[in-house]
Image (cartoon, rainbow, N blue to C red; front, side, top):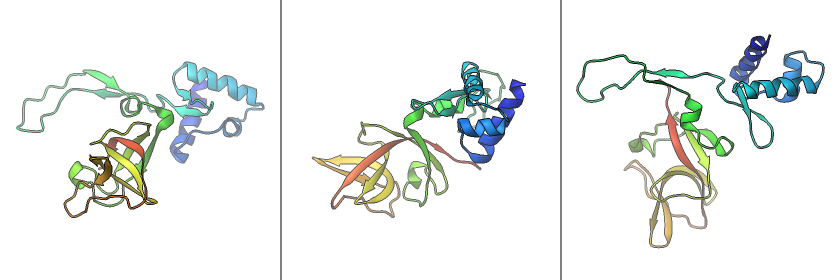
Length: 188
């Protein structure tokens, strides 16, 4: 029975690209009380199927399971391929350090193409209080959002693109860094 519940929650997640609320789980599984939902969610948390954030909302955990990691592939000259199961990996755990401070944004434009970030890519970003110079960041410059390298000259912070066709950006009024880019996801 619990596998059926997991499948329904997983289907909801895939369709809506978010976890259901407790009320939505109640309807989805035809439960008569929120207490039944609460007990089920705690059981799913114990099984590591889902987790809870600091506000108690349900977050995906190992909802997609783990993927086999079978070794290395040569990006230079070809070498003999040996398929060997070296480990399994969960992309959520690999890409996301702090789930509550992490979100995904879709990239528009080509100003970061030389950093390997193309239009249509997804970037995994993390809100933080520290923004190391040299990192790729999400920033607001005079009210406009952008993704660029954070640089500093003297006491002045500025943003640098990774495409020679674009100019360096200095804020006229305000430069506010919001998040650090942690990963780029591209689907072929």
